[in-house]
Length: 69
Image 1 (cartoon, rainbow, N blue to C red):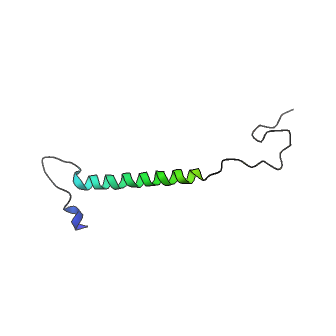
Image 2: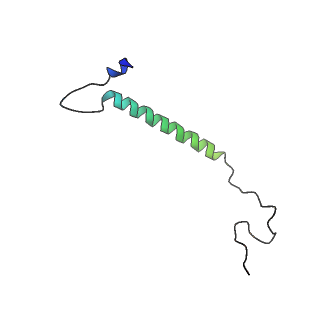
Image 3: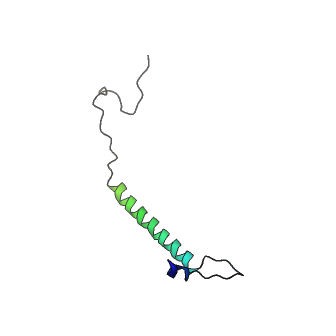
C-alpha cells in the first residue's frame, strides 16, 4: 500500500486528483465497460416470448382483463 502513496503528489498550493485519481477512475471505467458488455451478452440470450396460459379461455387474450357483467 505504501508504493501507491508515492503516486499521490501533495502540493499545498493546489489540490488535484493526480495520477492515483486517474488510475482509479480508469479502472472503474473499464469495470463498468466490462459489466455493460456482459449485460448485453446476457440480455441477448433472454427469450422474451411468454408462454400461453393453459387455464385461459381460448377466445380471450392473455393480456386482456376479464369481461365484467
